[in-house]
Image (cartoon, rainbow, N blue to C red; front, side, top):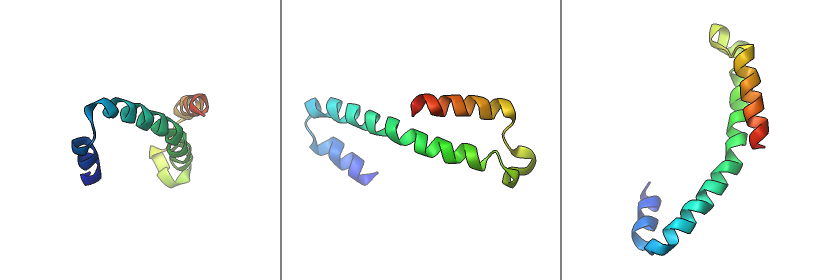
Length: 68
């Protein structure tokens, strides 16, 4: 959190908008790499009675494929 505050304090206000847009694009590329393992690990026997149902797996797969 300290580097984020340092960049926000030291950067020019005009560059923060483009920095925000670049971070949003970067996060949109990283999100599927977090969702796919999450769906995998929460759909198996490891979770027991708390595992994902078929409907949740279907919508999770559709959403993750739409992001990839």
